[in-house]
Image 1 (tube, rainbow, N blue to C red):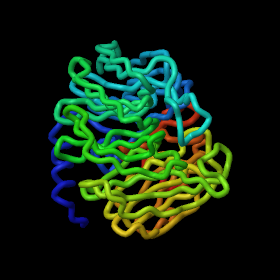
Image 2 (cartoon, rainbow, N blue to C red):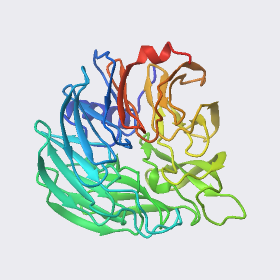
Image 3 (cartoon, helix red, strand yellow):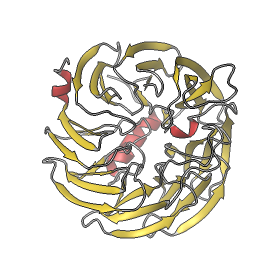
Image 4 (cartoon, rainbow, N blue to C red):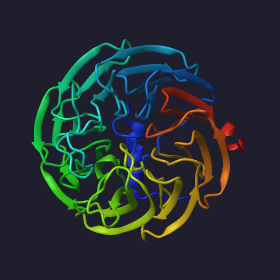
Length: 411
């Protein structure tokens, strides 16, 4: 049995004692697993591409789509409880706070053709919006200067958000009152605020390419760790942490390019920073591949000393020793893997752009099962509720499938 660090154990105990879902993928490891007996299979068509990860509480699942619809779905039956609509996409993972579900509205449009130097991310309405969990009616709304695709976090009663215009905002999640706004000049896209203790959080952004540690109370910057100017995808990666290090990934240009260019060859890189001061501990190159127009980074998972991460530019899944940065194993997939993973009993589950759900042995990377689902999986990432994996797809399907079904499939 793995021995948990004091910091991680305290985080898990706190998460268990606190009702709600107050950060991206539930905790600092990005391992969105909720214990319980649920074992079910269903499929709900939303009609719009899904870039958001779902969240679940008290038997109800919440997920938004890129057509601006927020769904509340009975996790056991797949029956739609209610749905609500806003003008712009809902790509952030919903937060659950008291009797509210909080989402970020905003699109991925940038005013620059250079992925590494955006002027601003987001056009049209951008806002943090709280809906009544039971009825789906809007309780409050906070307009933002840039896209609210990045997922916020609630820390010591303050909701923090890093938007597509480079602003860090603090909001009272009970009322929607904006407490402060601080501009850091680094544009967030699909990242997420990561609580790291002492009332602080870490976020990532491009333009001013960096990771940042920030006080939730007031928005003061503790440190920032810069990356090369030509790199991109930094603001697309939601970081993970073991309490000592923070991990994420990005893409780097290949000579003769001095910056990343859509459609050109780039290199996927994974890195580790020290949480206390932002010092770079390691930065390794993975595969090369063509830079996509959107979603330039993969969503990582930390579990049992390993960093699991796919690739936004090539069809691979990796396990990296989190302390040293040494590659432990790499497994080819049938499509690029941009979304996150879940680890259940030593098996990691995830989806790829080829339309497959995978189950791999976490220590060796050997295939336990692979199931073709006839729909692509992009950054919409899976959660596990009991014995069931639930995930949103690129075609707009929300799918629930038993873990055993994935393990037993070899398509």
